[in-house]
Image 1: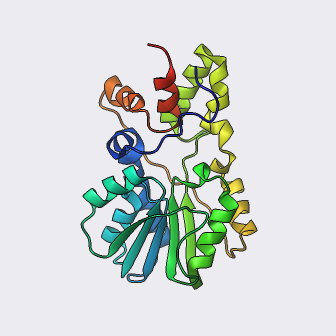
Image 2: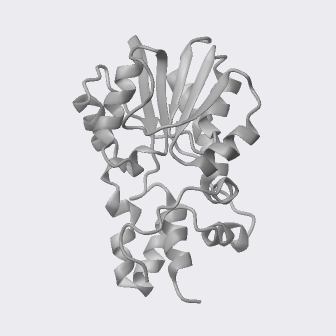
Amino acid sequence: MVEAGRGDLWSAGDAYELYVGRWSRRVAREFLGWLGLPPGGDWIDVGCGTGTLAQAILEECGPISVAAADTSPGFLQHARRQTGDLRVMFVQADAEALPCAGRSFDAAVSGLVLNFVGRPLRAVREMRRVVRPGGTVAAYVWDYAEGMQMMRRFWDAAIEADPAAAALDEGVRFPLCSPARLASLFSDAGLARVETRVIGIPTVFSDFDDFWRPFLGGQGPAPGYCMGLAP
C-alpha cells in the first residue's frame, strides 16, 4: 500500500511512452486540428514531457519555432533524442514560472499536464502572459473520472481489492478533468472566448499483456501505486 501523493513519478521516457505516450500522440494531432491555427508562428509547449505535443506541432503546424519546457530532466533527455528538428528548443522550466519574456509566442499549449501542476491557475496565467495579444492558450487533459477507460478500469479494480487505493484515484484527485472545471480555470486566468470540446480516441490493445505491462513501469499514479504493492 502507498500513501496518497506517492507515485506521481515522471522521469523515464520509455516507460511513459509504453504507458500513455502512444495514446497521447493521437490526442495531440486531434487537438491541433481542432485549434486550426495557420502555419508559422512561435509556439511554447508547457510541460512537454517526452516531446509528443512538440513533435506534433512540428509535423502538423509548420511553426517558426517551438519552445518546449518541462521540469523532468529524464523526459527532456528522451524528447531531445526523439526530436532532431532545429526549430525546437528544450528547456528545463517550471510551468508556474516560465523563463520567457511576456508576449513572446503566438500560441501556448499544454498536453496532459495541468492536473499535475501545484497551482494550475498560476500556470495558465503564465501561459497567457507569454502569449501575444490575439494569440491562443490551450490545453488538454485525460478524463480520469469517466472517459479514460484504461485507467478507470484499473482504479475500479484496485479500490475493490484495496479500499485505501481510493485516495490515489485520479478521477477523484484531479477535478480539472471535467470540461466545466477547465473552462472555469481558463476564464479565471483572464482568457476570453473560452471553448471546450471532447476528443475521443480508441485505445486498442493486442492482448492483456499489452494493457498490463505498462502498469509495471512505475510512471504515473496508477503504475506508481501498482509497483508500490508487495509482490
